[in-house]
Image 1 (cartoon, rainbow, N blue to C red):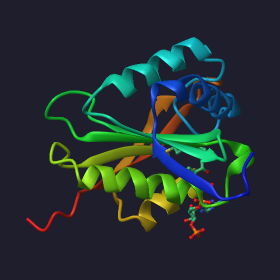
Image 2 (cartoon, helix red, strand yellow):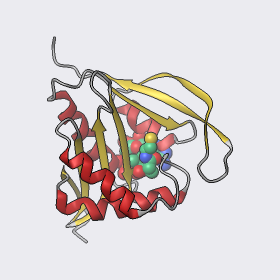
Image 3 (cartoon, protein in one colour):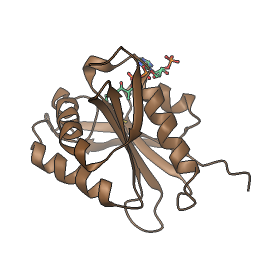
Image 4 (tube, rainbow, N blue to C red):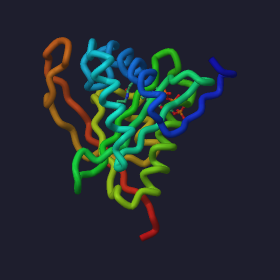
Length: 171
Ligand SMILES: CC(C)(COP(=O)(O)OP(=O)(O)OC[C@H]1O[C@@H](n2cnc3c(N)ncnc32)[C@H](O)[C@@H]1OP(=O)(O)O)[C@@H](O)C(=O)NCCC(=O)NCCS
C-alpha cells in the first residue's frame, strides 16, 4: 500500500486481474452494481481485457501505491450509442476521494474524445453516494426506471435513476 494518496491512470493489460478482483468484491456486496455476486473472476477478467483492447473504451484504474483499489469505464456499447459509465471503488478505500478522482479522470478523457457525444449511466435509486458524486460533476437526472430490474440475489424489483452528461467542447 502507498502513502495514503490515491492516483489514477489508464488501465493496461497487467492490471486486468487486479481490477477483476476489485469488481468481484464490490459485486459480492450485493448492493451497488448490476454485476451479480459470485460472478466468476475469469468472466470479469475477460470483460476488462476486452475493454482494454477496445479503442472506443476509456478504462481507468485507481491505485493506492501499486495496488488497484478501483476502476471505471466509459464505453459506447455499440456505434452511435452514448457511452455508458460504470465505476467501483473497493469498500476499504471509499470516502478518500478516489471516486472523485476516477470520475474526473474519466470525464476528461470523454471530453477529449470526439467520438463521445454523451455519457449515460444508471444507479440504483438508493445509491446516494454515487448519485451525489455524479450530480457534483454535472450529470443531470433524466428519469427513473421504476421496478425495472430484478435484484441478482433476491429477485425483488429494483428501480434505477438515469443520468446524463454531455461534453462541453465550446461548439
Ligand atoms: C460511488 C463511489 C464510486 C464513490 O467513491 P468514493 O471514493 O467513496 O467517493 P469520494 O470519497 O471520492 O467522494 C466523492 C463524492 O461522493 C459523494 N459521496 C461519497 N460518499 C458518500 C456518502 N456516503 N453519502 C453521500 N455522498 C457521498 C460526495 O458527493 C463526495 O463528495 P464530497 O466529499 O465533496 O462531499 C463508491 O462509493 C463506490 O464504488 N461504491 C460502490 C460501487 C458503486 O456504487 N458504483 C456506482 C454504481 S452507479
